Length: 152
Image (cartoon, rainbow, N blue to C red; front, side, top):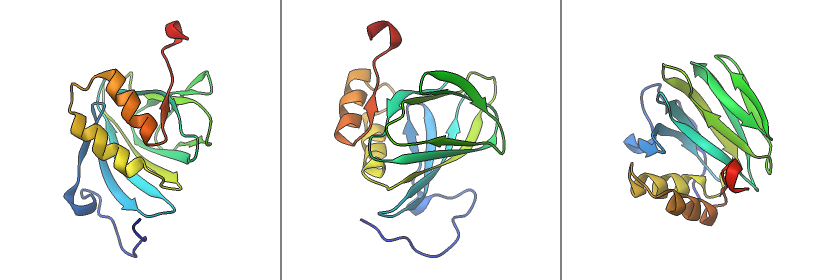
């Protein structure tokens, strides 16, 4: 596992030039170490991360621009620029761009666990990934997607 290094992650750059397509969003990793992992995310219009749980990580989302609709432990809400979304481990959450503009935000998790590897795996599945395969890959990386409400 990498050790965090001192420095500045520039606004338009990611680690090693990496940019992932994750479920239609663009993720650019900014920092990765054993204790934490951060990335800049662009939620393009109409994209979302379905409800899921991180059983071993705490997650944070700082909204830079746009409005992100959130589902937090079954309750609907939203976050706008300057807002911080706090997601304790084990709490189900989903994130949705229901607006007509992109949403930009900074995510981080602690500890890093296997999320960095999950993002590579999801990126490598391609833009037309089979949802069942996404769920299976995520489960192997300590992220548990929840079934749709009508399947529960």
